[in-house]
Length: 163
Image (cartoon, rainbow, N blue to C red; front, top):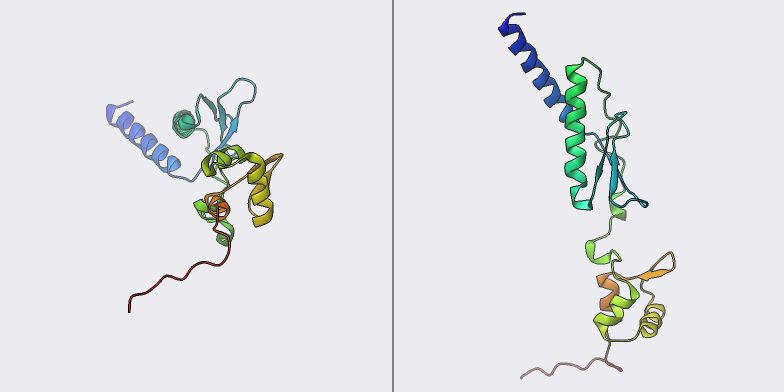
């Protein structure tokens, strides 16, 4: 085979690999409960699987596994399935909450921040109807914590204005 034909075939393969990698493939990362770390796989691509030791490594490892798999598929002349994930899913964006409203703090953390006891946090959560139950835990957002801050009893005082 002439050198020009080999170079042309290599360039065609590289172009095809780049086109395939530009497709919006989705991966799934699952926490490995037994061994720790994360197992990563692509539902649309049979056999593409990898592992990551930390959450921070998940995207890097997923990308690396995808790139290697696609390169081998193209070199061997095998087909690569199209992604089935819709790039623009019917998502109800009205249900997306601002970061300040996403519960991330436990009852103990709230108690420490507000300098009150855990039972007092529970009392305030019930009386002010804040917090979100997650299993047996009660979780709080920044907005919830602001609602539980100690308030002065009685009516708010009017600011005196200079005449």
